Length: 193
Image: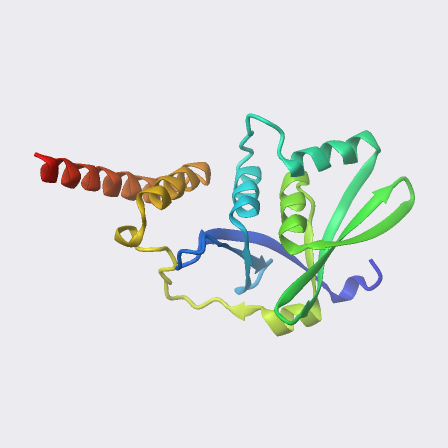
């Protein structure tokens, strides 16, 4: 790190679906010991991997981030940390700080890839202070409903959301989704009879 005093430690606070049908996920980063947060839009694949890695869920086959972690181990490379260092034109820039022996290398990557590798390797996440000042917001005390209404989801979206709720151990949401699927099945059966 070139300027440790300008780096602020953060953590992955939560992951949730966008309120539209584009199937994106929001990763909310939280500043440690603060109520400031930053929301980042990422793809479903990356968000689902991050959620699974945070819950130590194992996939049946190795995923790309598992493979990268294995490559790091084979070559004695340590992902020391990730640093979110810039935002330009709504694109968030992050870099991996890699160590091999005494050599330190920085690699610029997509924010979703950086967060996925950090979750996989349990590496710390930092944000440069100027990005915190520009992009983080104070989390309000009121509860915000950011989930898609169940009755607005397609059957496929319900099944995907159910799988994600179970993987992230959000059993209350999983029960709500299960009940909606059962309600629709009962309605369909009533119509067919």
